[in-house]
Length: 369
Image (tube, rainbow, N blue to C red):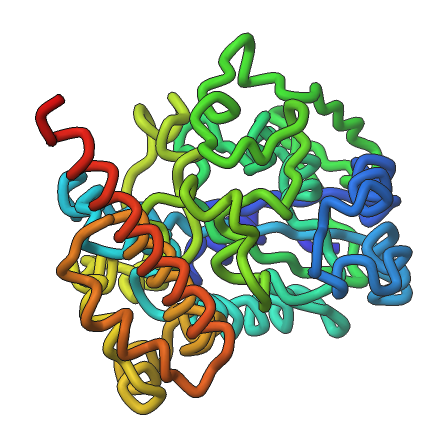
């Protein structure tokens, strides 16, 4: 039986900022997850609804699982001026995608950690049937806030999470030096325990993606719309998306825990995520609109942005260009009317019409009575 203190020490040595453990029982918050699926809040993310019972019990993923180990790595950077991120002529990218693809960085280290932990293990970085945030809360790594993010009281919520299921039980040492199995420790979580009466995240969401505290309707979330949604973005939501072209950080940016405590990691794993390149964090929309497939692949190879594919990123850039409202975007948008992708052509046409409508309104408003 491994000592929990030894596991913590090893996790930190391998570059993880946080580590916690819990007995591999039924998944905490399972009923909320099932209600979320039943309400259709997962949208087109069919993989979330595929065999949901596997997400509800670690035993269905790793027979004989005894312990769930959750690790975290901070991806805070603090290096890009806010005025650049909010420049409407630039497309804004969520900060988790400013550097290398986190799967490629964290997954190999997590698999090695799992092999060190036990003969049998399963390691996942946002890719397997594990509700990482629920388990992270159970493991004592923070609380799930009203914005549905895991919030660590001394690091905020800009955290990559990884999960390892192992067929070994850990031993927790008490202060007096004795030891007892982890399964004997009772763990209680209080919903939104650290949020208090704060609703900044809910109030700040421009698309009103939170029908209730702790409930995210992904179908209205900018991150979902720019990454997971493969088809046309609902017309009524496009003007609300601002200049976001990949993901969204708004509900985290306004969180007091993020503002006060979020800080860059000293971990060697985190070095792949910063310091960020300004053109990666907020690329110029005119550059994005002019990319062909070869340019897109060359520019974003090895990053999470590849997930959107060229058609998705250009679609998003068209929406951002429409919200920018500048005539400067019209030549690039007109060229996209002949793009090979129908999805791109549709959103380019919307952007052109939006810019023209904005110009007509401005002209009418400025004309003498």
